[in-house]
Image 1: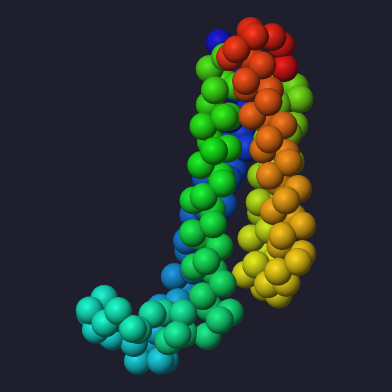
Image 2 (image 1 turned 120 degrees about the vertical axis):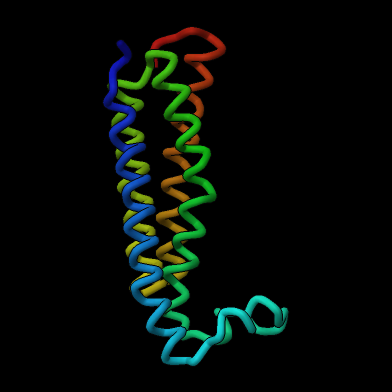
Length: 147
């Protein structure tokens, strides 16, 4: 059986995504009630958006939740390739854990202080880690080499 260590960060990021989902709705629903936003009117009026109707700090959680469905989808696929190829332990598992830690840090920055340059630096670093994982997966799949 292949080593399961690469799957631990996968499950951790999936769990974090659901934590962000809960945080988003725990702040968004009360904010919508306070702003008297009618969801039915909202979907039928292209000029009205929650970004205009709600405080920015409330929307930061929603934006981050959306971001967790962008680059991390590549991470999920690459982690599964590494797992299925039997190359998911050691360095790939460490890199996967680093990627998840950076994405969680990115989330925390975005939903609290939302400093764009700090977020970008964390995002760029997480992207570099993801590129390293992709390189290891490519090596495993195309060269049959050990990661």
